[in-house]
Length: 123
Image 1 (cartoon, one colour):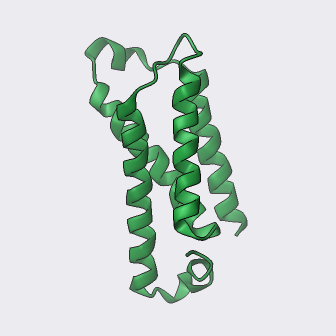
Image 2: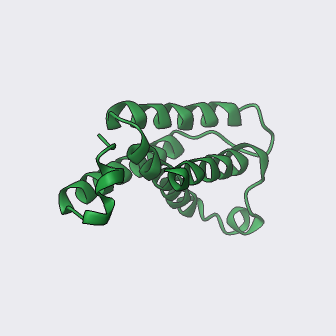
């Protein structure tokens, strides 16, 4: 359980840091690799959602909370000078959350004996 909480805290702090505080890498700006940014959004929210889904239930409520966090970060980016808010970023965040939900459901159905104590708590 402590490991899952550590994953949530680390992932959340990384998402907030890169979403609000740090500037995008210059290489992304120069080469206009904006689609790669969407992949990073999807991966970040997927990596946050997996341990959250294992800690909290129901998954719909936990996923909705994470999605609202993503919307809040995008709205907060309007107030920064280094970042831009985008509807496509919100969609990529939602895609990551849905991928994580699919992954956790598949794990629960796979019946791995060593994961039973953790997955029993996931909705």
